[in-house]
Length: 562
Image (cartoon, rainbow, N blue to C red; front, top):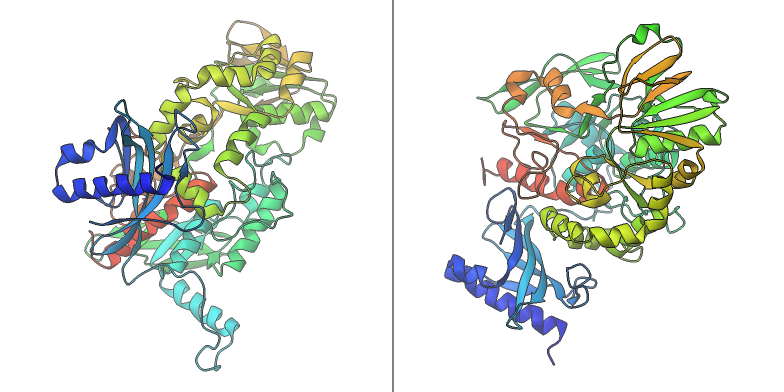
């Protein structure tokens, strides 16, 4: 009987022969008709996923072949990792195999990615005990390194959130001098300024920082302030060079002939000018808070604010509050208001929302990111399946998802909420990746809606105000002391135009959303403007794609690519 390893080894042999033959049909024959291939820099120096030399099995712990954990036919396939070489790089790959109609093992999904440039491999840790023959202490070394980077950073990273810090940590280990610019007073303040009840929605194994797994005593779900402090500590632990209380002044100028930027910065009130070769915008996928243009806001005698500025639900005890929106932020605020005894809480839902229970999300997340598997392994496995393929699988599981959360959904429908699995039936996880909205994780909100503690006005939207009411599109009015807008944000592209000017940003790709191949439209890949990159996404995205971005920047420095 063939073992998992021999199945994968035999397929790798056929696949390698097909690649060597340079025959596209031979390569295609190693795939199922519905199979996908994901290329991360191996063939195109870009992120690609297409529908439809020597390779070696990777037999390291956790990467050895095993029966398939994620496929349309769970338990009926085999998956495993492999390594390969190119003239200039080390690479690795992952394959998911299923049997075809002729009982032959064929690829359902293959991912190949460059892992390191030869001679410029990522350094895992400092291996020196004595610096300059004991003439320098570790503190001396840090001061010297910091001063050099502050004088002349190769990369300027704008944004000191989890994405910017992951980028900086990866760049440091790949000998790419990088300076992080953060406008807040402290690293982590972008989380401290969110509403107090914010807790990350996925288990801790999913939202760890690069190179820094949480202690085993860490809560399964990380609260806002704990994460903020961890990010601040992370910057110190990783010896990152950060400038807080710092922002760009004026519009950066790119000198085409020199291949460098000219960036004026206000650093703690002191003007500075830097000339980085690359700028990485890690300011998020979302722009400024969106406030819908409503009539007669000046007449309203109550309070109008965006959900991002709702810091203390206690301030609304005994008051009538309307929350406009039906996503994660909206339901969290509604629950906080109920817990702090608001006189009434009404949610305005314009269209429909995808709602998943914590139990369902936790089960899925821990299958993909088990607590006992190293972060890097889980990232590699998860990233090996193109987003477009994951979307197809999710669309085929709609009925199963409805059945799993039937109890929660029945409660929400009882309270008048309209439900869906997303506009394309992709479910909550893909909505989070594609749209960063349109769904919520239920943590008791269904019970409050079913009981009437949270009232739902569905299929309408606000249009204006009187002195004491919010006017809705059906002509009805709701009495309110406060109206909280939890209806999203402007696109980050508009914010970037203000920062860089239209001439530069109009040369770049769209950043938000995914392209027809299921890859990020503009993040972690050439933006369209030289020396300008975008880095966005949640924790696993930042960890996984910091390496491809670093390799692209390093390859330009080494003149392997333009």
